[in-house]
View 1 (tube, rainbow, N blue to C red):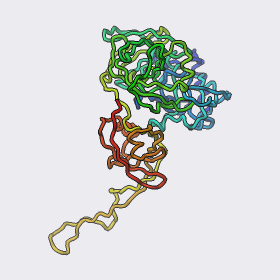
View 2: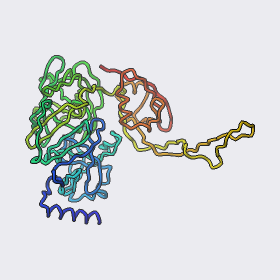
View 3: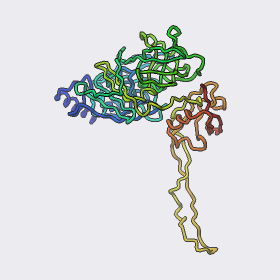
View 4: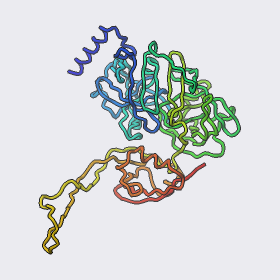
Length: 446
């Protein structure tokens, strides 16, 4: 009731001030605000308040309306209303997914507020990105932010700056490149160029900040877009309609005007997984986080402008998972630990005076049981070093190279799998209560 009354007060305050309720507004004199974000696996995770509840959302230029994932009890916690059941389809070769559409929700991002926001609650237990990133992620948001503001994404300093368009002024920048955007269903597209073999090929790409890969291309023999001879089959990710698989390879160069990236990662998703995406006229693929993070970016949807400037990530080498393991943060497990801060009352240190009767310090450590994150193997690339060592889907990792797994974040473990080829890995795992140890080496595939 208190939250409901607070929303009523907020509603009348905004009505009195004459703010539009159907779009985001910023509640300060500068009409601009900075929001810090986390950059995890090339993805932007930012704080979003929904109906008074603090949540974390992925910033995804590839979505039209905010989506809340079903692991959050949306009906009780968010008090969403004005609902109807619909079905959505996205990437993946599965069926459509059931979702609950809700209107008139209050969204707040920093000092930007919108009083009448639609959202979709998706009923699919597989769409829990928090498990894959190792941090809570409750939903995704995109178009509703970009259409109301000039959005500056500073990947190097990890902040988002939102500015009302009429208050924004472009600065001169000799080291920047400016692009014209095209839109389809509110999603931005950009033209670039890839070199596959000896051929430069112009491509039209969806800008997809919600994807962690570098580049996806749709194979098309008529255009010369194909994986070639050097590739490996792999799991590429999860879409609304299921898992996506395909080929991983490299492009010789990827060019955004004067900005040229060499040996960039590329994935060629199976045609069945991107059937819907390929229906969009002239679309050749997606440009995602592992390339976007190499620039500081200005999105201006109203003028259809994108501005790029290289940042300190630009020269980072493109790598890939050389183990074949995909992990998830799969709840918690009980861990027995020594509690070094607790001593028995009678263990009092005395000075050793050199006699036979002298008393020495005796520390009898006690143990405590703690809840620690559990990391579970959810995908294994066929023929990969991890699979050939005997590891299986469902194995829970207990330690890596003699260090307890829970002492790492999920991202730190994943980064180990992207290390140099030849690195030795020792994994102790729990398989249905049986503890075993497996050894393998990271393997170069190109």
